[in-house]
Structure formats: structure tokens, C-alpha cells
Image 1 (tube, rainbow, N blue to C red):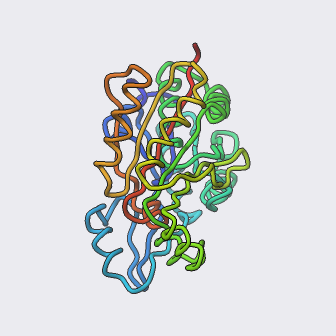
Image 2 (image 1 turned 90 degrees about the vertical axis):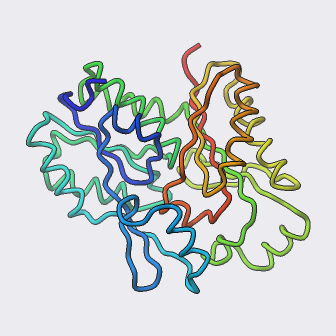
Length: 287
């Protein structure tokens, strides 16, 4: 792809999960979020690898905290890119889940609001990745800044995330679920499937009895969301490659595709899901 030499630069944040080869091909520049265990702070995707992160997660007495990039980080990135590009399209994880979009927007207004468009995709992880992929392809094909922003908005509406979790332990440590709720879920082997609603916030999309049933539930939901249309699929996992492959095999059979890319869930998101989570992105294509 000619994305790296295109007039428009493509920016996202480190919650944008894509296969490395795709990210490189579309030339996406990721501004990293940060992750901290107590006093120790790490730059997502830069100075902590997934294996190191899961070791720390298991050993740490305090749950990890995550924070959005500083406005200054975006300003530095935008200024550097505007030296060699006519404009910038900056795509971010849902404003309903993080202040990253607001930070990028503030930076754009301070640097050059006429040459930078910032989009709240209302997506995260692999669904944000599929928006970035579609926009990167459009930019490489010569889309203008306004056209690229419009494509980001329309593609976002045709994408859905479905995620399954083996336990609610990390949600309890992070204070998002009570210990009593988690005990009941564990006792009855209840596994929720989560999605992102139209408002860009995480919401429960039904429950299953047992983790394997919830993984199969990802496949059923993908088929239902596709509604008979061709799809683009992408899977992320938090140290759960076996579970991800299980989902991929079933999706390949249902959609008649040969291969579905599987990526590591970025550590800043794994801090919220814990080990074992599997996320599936489904993008409906034109029939």
C-alpha cells in the first residue's frame, strides 16, 4: 500500500489492535496509553511485552491502572506528521470508555484544526483496528481528509465487537463488579458476552453457561450481525491463543473463509479483561 507516502497521515492510539503487517502497510502511527502497577509506569506496546505484563498481573498485590495519552503527546505527534503530510486523520477508541479522544481533540485544536480531523469511532481493540484498516486503504487510494473522516464514520457503524471472559476476577479487582456477583457467576458457571453499544459504552450482550459456550456464542452473534453479508473478521486474545483458535476454526467453517487473523490484545486493555479473554470484531461489507 502507498499509505506511508499518502498526503494524509493516519493516527490512532495503542488500543488499536491489528496484525503488525497490516498496521505497517497502512502506516498507522499509534500514540500510546500508559499502564501502571503502583508506582511503576509503562508505555503500552513500548516497554512491556504481553508475557511480562501477565507475569506482573499475577504477582502484583495492586490491580493495574491505565491512563490516556497526554495532550502533549498528541501535539508532538501531530506537529511531526504535518511537516510531511497535508493533513491528519486521528481515529480513537470510544469516548465512552476513555478520555483519549478528548485529549486528541484538544491537541488538534491547539496544533492546526483545519488540517486535523479527530474521530470518536465508538470502537476499541480489533474493531478500532478494522476501522483503521478501511481508512488506511481509502487514504492509500487517494481519499481526501474529509472523505477519509466520512469513511471512518460509516465503517464504524458496520462493525461490532463481541467479547467473552473466562472469569470476572479482574473486574472484581478493578472494582467494576462486586465480589458477591462474581461468586454467583462462578458458582453457576455464568459467562457474560460483552459488546459496545451505540453510545460507545460497554454493555452485556447475554450470558452463557460456561466459557466454551460463550466462545461459541461469539460465533452465533457474528453470524447474526453479518445478516448474510460478506464480512471481515479479526480476533484478539489475552494469553488465550487456544480459545482464539477455537473461535477462528468455527468462524472459518460458518463463513467459508480460509483464515482469520489473530492478535494479542494490547496490554492496556488486558489490564481490564485479565487473562483468558477473547474479543471478536465483525465488519459487514457491501454484498
